[in-house]
Length: 312
Image 1 (cartoon, rainbow, N blue to C red):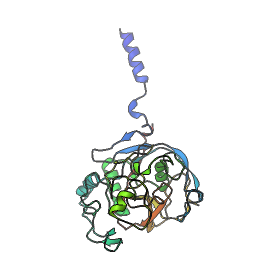
Image 2 (cartoon, one colour):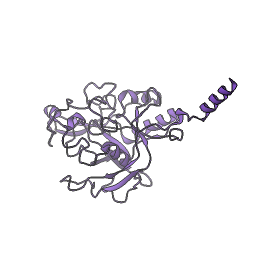
Image 3 (tube, rainbow, N blue to C red):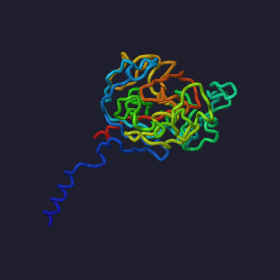
């Protein structure tokens, strides 16, 4: 009997601990009840940027593309940070709404800075819900939320780098759009479509399909991409860590952020928003804005490195 017990103990102690196993690509991680849901994005390689053969008006320096390596898995928000998630931060940090957010002026037919619009009352949508993405927050305010989240959880939260963002948005695709030529983009991306055009006629072409939302949609309302990430294209533009550039030439090829000593006044935004034309609402297009700007079409999602324990 003692021999059998000894053999059983020996077998159990030789088994690997499941708790130390690295989370598999595509699996979900949640660090606290009010924390954003995270998805494990696998390591890999991709061509960053868009060849001139794929897009006629390539004014943002996407070409020539560069071969990029994402050397290890990382975590990315399953969705854009929601109003409910940001509210916890605002309450704990006593973060008061700050006015001056760029919103669509229907009378003048253009975007203007409105001192009465804040992240609490962005105006888009007219009655924002807890599961709508946060908007009307600038790059520094996004970074402060992330620093608070890192301190709260003890985990290495950050903004995604531009390379990580495009890699995750492409989700293994190399074409102009991740959903391919045979699928309706409105099933995946909330952009300037027929629904939005009827409510807010704009000067640029709209997608010839219906996504069902005239402006910002609750996160996760449409289909996820092949990595299990929602709203990588459309809904709200998303801040990245990188300084704004007009070329990929010279950037780090290991997925790290491209930043300058002393910081930068303009930073990268990715993905397009609810009002963005199909030409710009795609993985390769990189927009930029002043780090202090706030928009009713701009939000962010979080990234985080895997901890040493999670990589075992």
